[in-house]
Length: 72
Image (cartoon, one colour):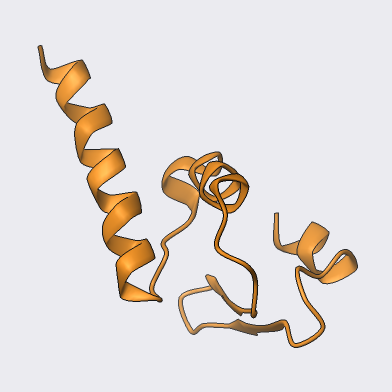
């Protein structure tokens, strides 16, 4: 996933940093759209939205509702 984003950046100001644990931190200015949420959620547990906090909370709520469906 990271290799693809190196080759095809999300925005002109995209910055990618490898963290000590080997994960990649990506920062980019993008428009918040339903397509962005769909794209992010398509990565499942391979991605964590850190900010903006309202988008993080929306994704967390969606994941929580999905998990509830499987608990029944």
